Amino acid sequence: MLAVHQYIDHTILKPTCLVADIQKLCDEAKQYQFAAVCVPPNFVKLAKELVNGTTVKVATVIGFPFGLVPQKPRLLK
Picture 1: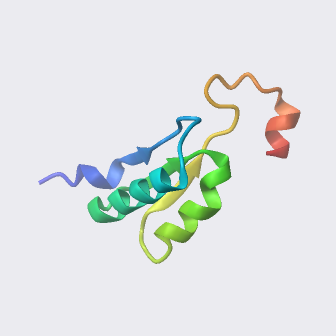
Picture 2 (picture 1 turned 45 degrees about the horizontal axis):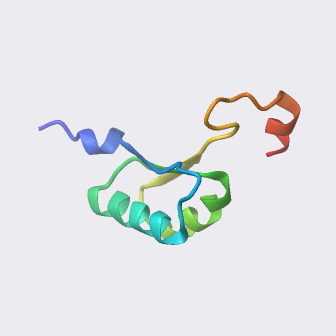
């Protein structure tokens, strides 16, 4: 059986997400052994703490949703 769950990035990027949303996302990622969670930049530290000790990685985005932020501010993020 193909272990497709190992290739899934579980994602929440809505601008209104809360700490509880990140906790739920990370809990599900750990439960189903997803490859990663993708969260807004301001939640990276929390997500990293929540998945610590597991194989789940943390990813984020810069200039989301359109990537229209000029290069210099993106690099500073």
